[in-house]
Length: 191
Image 1: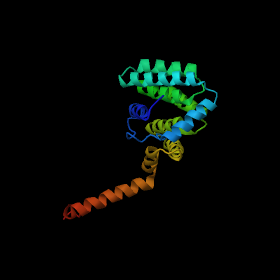
Image 2: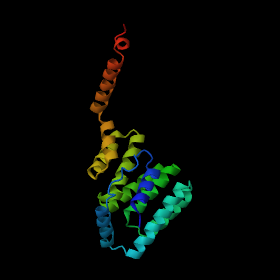
Image 3: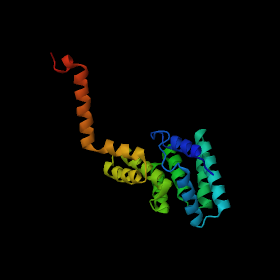
Image 4: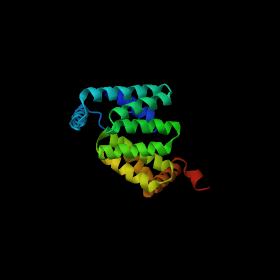
């Protein structure tokens, strides 16, 4: 079973721009609730444990720079439990590391569909898809994904929404200019 530390490491590896520790759902109650939901979805506990172990092996492989091995482990997890969203989210991150953005987007879409837009896997998938959209200058799509991730508890997504807000950007620029003038009153007026 993945521990809070395992999830933090996974988040840091696959989401390098996410601040460490900004991982929704780390408290034990939510973890137990998700475990119960997964088992309630018809996943056999032994199979679920095997899939989680494969995902952790994938994370370890990615940590050591072996993206191919990580993709193999995540692929095995998906073959064993094709209806579990987490493995698709994890594989999407490995695909993105390999440069397969289209493949990553397909896996993120699948993870969101399988999770029904709820829970930790959905939140992480929305954040990742939002980041990809942002890198592709598709700000409106990025904004929608970050909004959904923020509603699921992602502080990182909330910060991204602020950065995407043109009024916020303008206010930040004006604030920086004002602080510059306060720090250097003579230089700002051109005297």
